[in-house]
Image 1 (cartoon, rainbow, N blue to C red):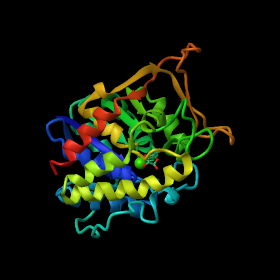
Image 2: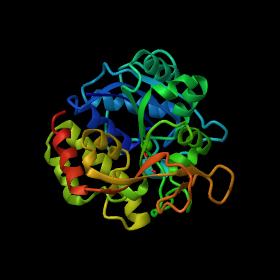
Image 3: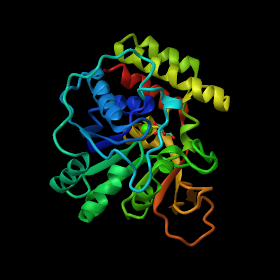
Image 4: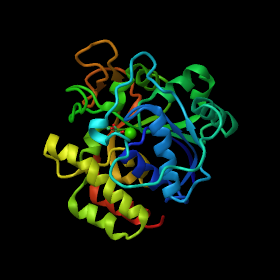
Length: 311
Ligand code: BDR
Ligand code: CA
């Protein structure tokens, strides 16, 4: 299995991404989960990550708290999407497992230094603050990261937090800029992909029909999450953004994309956090990311439902 660290700001869709990884031990070995401030403040994302580990029957999973604010800006949160706790919807118990000792950034650095170069994949599902801080604090780790597979950005689907920007990149554009310039191989799941991964009512019924606490919680989480996108965008259901990252690790063939240059806007107030993706190759800037554009949505949902049923 591929060794990964999940860096996350749960978030209902982050929660489903974590569950999918924990349900797939043949393909994925989760070394630890690092929480970052994003959808809700850090205290809640660190809490929510532990709630999900306990739901998955994995109270042994190390969960670390990381950065509580972006590198250079005040935190912007998304309670309007995810609810007050970030995990509104199901009625899940408060976690009893403790947080792991130490800072998430130090855990990321230590893991990369103690495992063989290239053997650890980072999976950021929120703002890139923890990852950028680790790269700044320990520049030697860049050469040791196998790949970064992240959810963030948009091209044709433009923005969901401003007209130009996707939430994860917008919240900490300076951190995103560091990551996109790091030279580490990047795979990016932008809104272009995730807005095709919609929980229609039939797909929600399939989660519920699993008939386990996990199946029910996922159905309730996506029920809650979808009211925002349905009202706001007239979408057919909740977009499962972050699970695209963990699905890619299990079956990359579900996705298609292009290896292109992607730069992050950090200067303009109007387009702050925009992922300027050279999809058509109109510049000679070097490619730095595999930017996905297509997903086999039916294949993705059958994989997800089948895996969730294992927990
Ligand atoms: C991203 O922002 C968050 O609200 C979701 O969890 C996802 O990571 C989508 O823009
Ligand atoms: Ca997220």
